[in-house]
Length: 121
Ligand code: FES
Image (cartoon, rainbow, N blue to C red; front, side, top):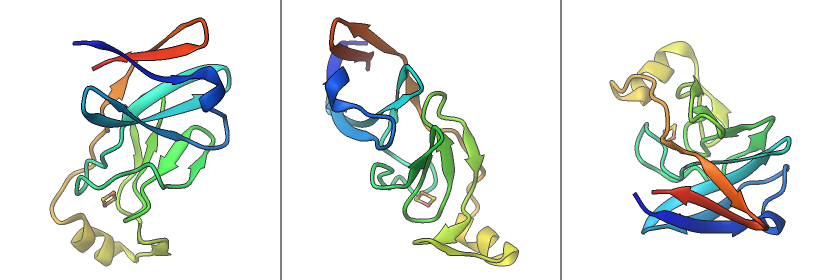
């Protein structure tokens, strides 16, 4: 693992996520309360990017099919709920999940040194 600077504290606010790169991996950096957090910018459903999803109360919603993830833990809290924001009925959710079971997204501990934020990737 390599410690990599991903942002400064001034880059990250509590109302939106920041897309960043660390060792060639795309990540999302967020601030929840006073805590800085980072997860992979890759939805475990179909591998699509999460960064443009709605961010609210420490949770990001995948912009493609509505799966939700806690940005401080990577924990999946909802799985395949919609298509580009349009809610799906139960049977369609199963079809859209394409046989994939709910999964967490990779999370990374964020360390702060002065104004700089680092993760180990
Ligand atoms: S790609 Fe994210 S929920 Fe489908």
